[in-house]
Structure formats: structure tokens, C-alpha cells
Image (tube, rainbow, N blue to C red):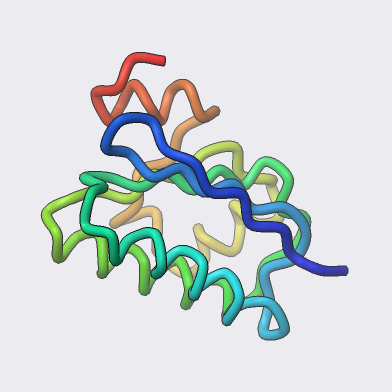
Length: 117
């Protein structure tokens, strides 16, 4: 399977919706797409909506961690939402929930960013 990366924004919040599989085959594509958007310097925060992501491996964790560092260096926060149980377990085992904010859905994540939808 492949990966589909949908990028949009709501005011100063970058919203990235991932669908498919985020693994060593697709990590570069995801990283480049997000980095292109973040390089614009117009986003205060970033939301990763994983509702359609069916698989993720350690390469995917690396992509998420790299974007976390990037947005944090700009003074922003990275929010996760709509994470499937198997992927949730991967984040849990990696300890990333200690640094990432998890929300049930995109609306809740937008609210946490201070952006009314």
C-alpha cells in the first residue's frame, strides 16, 4: 500500500492528514511534504490527523519526532488526533505521548490550538 498526504491549514495551524501506510517506503515522501509546508514559516502549530493511517513503523515515528522538533524550535506544538489502537500502542511504547498531545478528533485538536472550527 502507499501513503496519501493531505495538507491544509486553518489560520496559523498546519493540518496534515495521513492515509495508508507510513513506513520506510513512504517516510521520505511524508517528511518532504510536511517540511515544504513548515518551511513557509507561517504556522504556529501542527495537527497530524491519523484517522486513515492503517500502519506505521519506526520510520514513521522518526518522521513524527522530526516534525515535533521542527515545530517546537519555532515555538509551536504538535498535536495528534484520531489514532488507531495499533498505532496508539506504538506511540505508547515509544514514550512519545510524554511530549505529544493526543486528541480524539481534529475538532478537539483545533480547539486545543485555540482555533475555533
